[in-house]
Image (tube, rainbow, N blue to C red; front, side):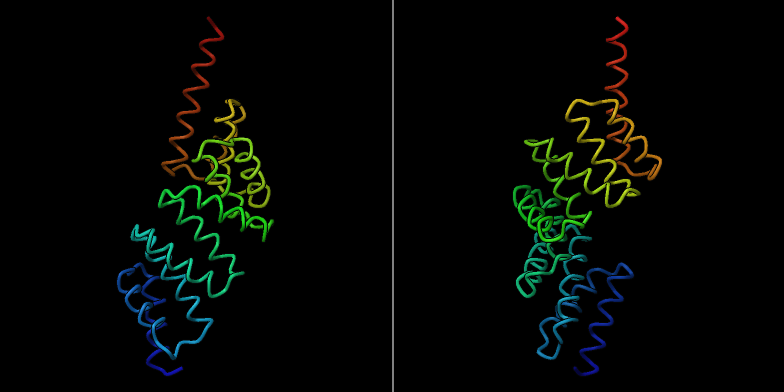
Length: 202
């Protein structure tokens, strides 16, 4: 691989790392199109390209990048997880559930795959029990993740266990006190718990 092509790859990686996503996308796309690029760097470039497009809220573009990476390397589990996340962000929930389910089967020890499946099921709103199970599996594998603990709490809340939900969300807030989604969930559960207490006193 020539120095010019290598420099193009290195510059694109640096651009994405430093938040210059549009420039990084342009350079990485040119690198991928080069007949000189090697397999490993090309697939890494595809993953970075998908990430950069996601950072610019181009989730459909990100989906195409991760799908291409999977076609080129069908066992690419990071691409599967990233594809599932992109489907979630694009509000393509059934596709997110499908791809996360495959990722969980292929790699049962992947906390992000379990978490993605759990959250997709929560968004779908049809199977809160399975959503809780997948979120709890993710938490078992990654107990310090505030996002995963938030998902466990939210699943418990959707199943009507307000007290247990409050406990999980309190821990999530302690781990990440500034996350807007976690705070919104905690406030809703706290309000539900207060309303329940008031009803019991009447």
